[in-house]
Image (cartoon, rainbow, N blue to C red; front, side, top):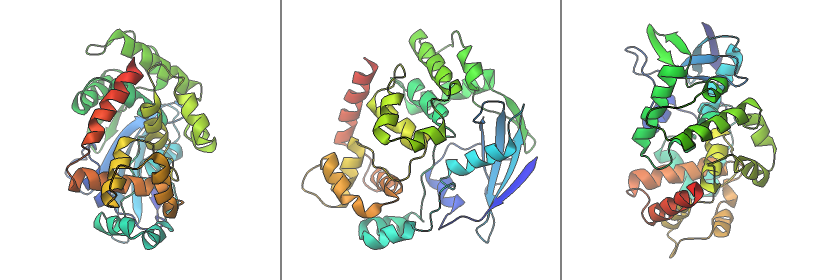
Length: 309
């Protein structure tokens, strides 16, 4: 087991991340710890990571790996999951420039976005989740992990990482998944193995180019492409073009009507260079304080149906 420590740049609370973003692995009887298991980018093995935060704010991690996976790469992925791979020292200044965001920062304890472990796992999530509930999708991914992923021992218990691309690419069929979804998952696996879903690559190229590349994957339309890019690659300074964001902005800024994406971008100018972090705060506020998206649901359903063809 390898151990790591990081002093976050800018405010960060692991307890808040655990509170507002769930679905973590349990770690024995330690209620303060957050655990995760995932295939390590480079795809030579998998990792399980336990993350804790000390009283002085230092983030501490314990990493176990399989195969030839690099523990340092696994730790870097765990940090990226919490947006801790980004210097957030300037995030409080966004709230100074925009009091709406400042109030949300204070209310939610400087919450940072929690991302998927990799763009690969984000793509899998959006493909599996088509036409089924979030609970059903989580159950399918958990079964795939148990049956085909790498097993690791963590805090005295066995955990399972999601299958690496080469493991998923060999999937011929799976109970509960239509053949078309299985075929799409194999395509995602091949794209990951070929480097098309590399986090650093997707962050480095222009957003329109990244979205266009992602939509070349079978079954990935505009909605899923944005999710893979923003929640998988973890873009920091961008604003998603979706109904939920527009509704959140309309309500938070007390607009008379739902804004266009261009109008949202104008409002979001003071959020730079943390526009995605501010967007996530608005999403959390909408879902927790305003009863969730309303009219956006119908638009989202229609969009996803169109993407699936």
